[in-house]
Image (cartoon, rainbow, N blue to C red; front, side, top):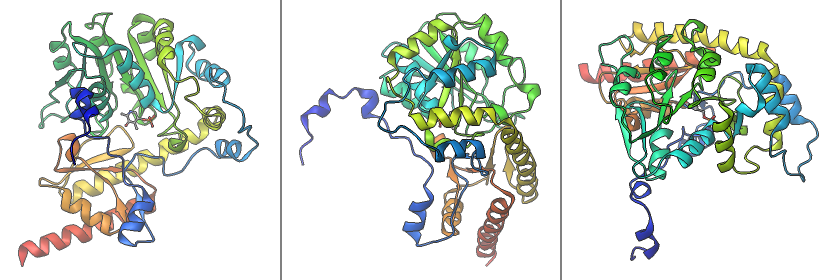
Amino acid sequence: MAEPEFLQRVPEGIRGMAPYQPGMPIDELQRRLGLSDVIKLASNENPLGCSPQAAAVLRGEHQLARYPDGGGFALKAKIAAFHGVAPEQVTLGNGSNDLLEFVARIFLGPGRAAMYSRHAFAVYPLAAAAQNAPSVVVPARPVDAEDAYGHDLVGFARALSDEVAAIFIANPNNPTGTCLPGGAVADFLGEVPESTIVVLDEAYWDYQDPSTRPDIDALLARHPNLLVTRTFSKIYGLAALRLGYGLSHPALADLLNRVRQPFNNNSLALAAGEAALADQAFVAESVALNARERARLERELSARGLQVLPSHANFVAVGFGRDAAPIHQGLLEAGIIVRPMGSYEMPHFLRVSVGTETENDRFLAALDGIMGTARDAAAG
Ligand SMILES: *Cc1c(COP(=O)(O)O)cnc(C)c1O
């Protein structure tokens, strides 16, 4: 078939793009392999679900015929109070990805580049490509460093130029789990010109050691070009609802609001978000489970001779020292979905979300089965 003519109008960035690859849904693996008992450790979701109070709100009455509050007044007020900022500094997104898109739409384009680290969140290159913007990809920390594969902010600073319009920093980073030392973000911001936007993506903030957390109050007060993003998809367990937010100078929030769809957050998400934010006991419980199980996974995987990148999030990147695709496939056949990292240029690694104790046990047992078989085959 001849190529439809409209393809000639498509900008280079979009032509060369591969769509985001989400973690495989449980239903899909069940369908594909005829399995009934499937667990998913592939998208860094909260294995405890969400706050029971948020779940109760969702079961209540909702005016589904009415448009949602396009300004998100009540939730914004609660987020502002939670962070001790003004509501004018809060921007709501349909997931925090929405905020990344707003930044790209406003600031990126031909001659207006994005900057990000080599093994960073997959959405940054996609957002840049969709704007037909160039990307400055900063090499990661060396493989023998303690923070191997993590962000090198010294390298970021060296790569700054007039062309760089927006910088994306994931801290802790997905898919590596690495986190910047306390103070590193503040030092870096001091070197970035105020005309360049810096997005500090803190999707995993709750999981990181408090001593490493940047002081975002101080940073927001000092840097009008800073956008801090947070999400309800991870610790709050509301990934299905698509809810995230940004904190920034009001002038930046005003710009973000101009390109935001008028009703980007649905009513259920707005209502559940309020309840979820109020339930910090659930957050604490989720943090505690993650800390316990992440440490156990790191211990168990290291004991098997595998490379485990020290994680500050709710997943671990596990290195096998060889192509991890067969192990990924073996796990799928055992009903366990984890994330291959080839698209992150780390094909020897798999990213495994920290599950419940039972889920993690099942993952480890399946892994032993697969690696034992591989060992036997090599021996025989
Ligand atoms: C999961 C994740 C997000 C969250 O995306 P949502 O759109 O809020 O679901 C943002 N940044 C990073 C680095 C992530 O891993």
